[in-house]
Amino acid sequence: MSLVSLQHPLSAAAEQRRILGQSAERRRTFAEALAGCGLHPLRATGIQVLQINVGKLCNQTCKHCHVDAGPDRREQMSRETAERCMQILAASDIGVVDITGGAPELNPNFRYLVETARALGRHVMDRCNLSILLVPSQSDLVDFLAAHRVEVIASLPYFQAAQTDAQRGEGVFDKSIEALRKLNAAGYGQPDSPLKLNLVYNPAGAFLPPPQPQIENDFRRELGRRYGIVFHGLYTITNMPISRFLEFLLRSGNYDRYMDRLAQAFNPAAAAGVMCRNMLSVGWDGTLYDCDFNQMLDLPVDHGSPRHIRDFDWQALGGRCIVNGEHCYGCTAGHGSSCGGATA
Amino acid sequence: MAMAGYYHAEDLPRFPEVGKNAPELWEKFSAWYRAVFAEGALSEREKCLIALAVAHAVQCPYCIDAYTQASLEKGSNADQMTEAIHVAAAIRGGASLVHGLQMRNSLAKVSL
Image (cartoon, rainbow over all chains, first blue to last red; front, side):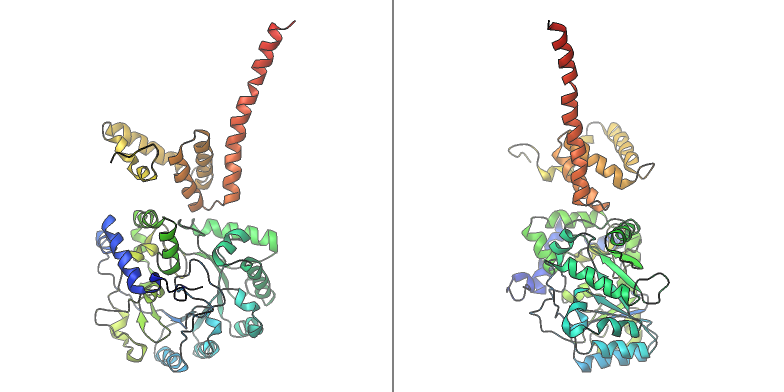
């Protein structure tokens, strides 16, 4: 169940922000770390990616989920907001649309977004949890994605069942393998195929991801050897200390050690390449954020930028000052972390 | 600062305090330590697994904590880490058992 359904105090973004703010007393703040490498205030360098979070409904309830998504969540982007997003896209030269959730495919406007963005000639990415491809109502989803040349970014935390199921739920690994086979059969992930299939690794616990090329090689070898599965690339993403992963960190006594680890591993090169500098995140209700993590902490764009898609202003948003906090250490630790994997 | 008992996890980040009364020696140790664990003929992942195994052989809880985390962050999994500590345990066990030859030599010497 989601933290919201459990009526857990951490379901409130304000409580998460309070805890993250307190912990800053133990170490230099993220703003100080940025200042130390000449990146404060952090500014956007444009908008190359429009990331649209269409809602919190999901068929899974993963333990690390920063969205607190699940089958019990009902927040969904309306048709009106989806249309506004596409109007903004049509009037801009934003090249990439990154659709996420929840399980974004469950939103009734998902296919409208894909069809419209592709008709505009933009690259579209679907952040897919894999098991959604096996849900009966989505039986034609693989064909739909392939027909529109949608890049599939598929979550698979490990090539073994134990780690995957521990994070994503009992039986999810087997479903993920079945879904990957469906994608491969449709041409996704095959060498030289235009149907891009990239996997997402994130640690099954309170530790940083290994070097991306190394774990990608491990996945390629093991998924190929054990299951005959092929894919194009693998992105490593660090677990962010918010929402359900924050709850895990606090409950398991790992919180301070994990935050110290993130801060100690602060990498200026990763900070320079953070994804918020070239993307804009839209929430299910049309609110604008610097990233999906700020979205879940209820930290909309600030410093005078318009805060809703209906008020979109290219000039104001393209060079905006980025809102940051202690959770941002998650994107700047070690090799860096973004929706596109390592950044340094 | 004084705490009852030994081996507190909170002490591990304080390791550099050991250098307070011999900073030059600490700096030499630190530089050598960093060089040892850098990628070389062996990968960083392999070196971390060796360190994890040795940590069990010398039974250092600080090193076990540190190299469990480090092994995970270098991409090792629980199966590989468990096999590594079996290697350490097998060598420890084997080292005891191979002394049985000394026992057999002594036995032979004093026996009719």
